[in-house]
Length: 280
Image (tube, rainbow, N blue to C red; front, side, top):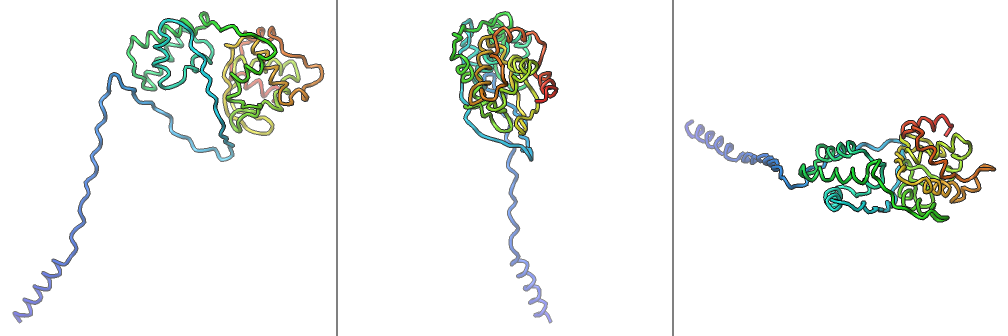
């Protein structure tokens, strides 16, 4: 009897010892410490979360030619190039309408507060002073350009091709084509004025062109001269076979027509509303 109990105890002890050892516990990796802010660091660029692709949208990929006109000569130009071009090309300064000192100050503040640019108050003040001295409505001076028969294609290549593409074909879903569409914008005096307004004041909102949906934005090109705008509009309404689509009796857009529309009071949003009223 005692021998049987001993055998049972040994068996139980052996079973206990034969159990597999417990799995090792893996400690959670330590949370990395948040790096301390560095006074001369680049900061953090906060980007919006990516959005899912729209189910019926059409997307395309194409070359994006770089064109960066030089900044105006002046005090602290090098300072602006040094600090602003770290995150974006100085084209953002040269290829938009001139802004007031207050608007430039607000823009620089946004770069500091929303995008984490790390520059001192003194540098920020000098950047604003330069921008207000050379890119405000009453201080901006455009470099004179020769306006000849080739200025239309030259302006298109320099200002328009990056979005509307070589050959005026546009980018599907984003930038509408000019080929086959631009002549329709000269079919009536109202459409003609609207075409000029779009170039001067921009266009924002979804549009339909040749049965396709486009969701993009046309920036104001009011910094161009009246002669340049007239020349490039005459180019895009006649290039790529568009001349064959023009209504009889349509005359080229004149620089004085452009000048007359500068004070029209239109905006990118109003141009979108007007486009619909014109049946476009």
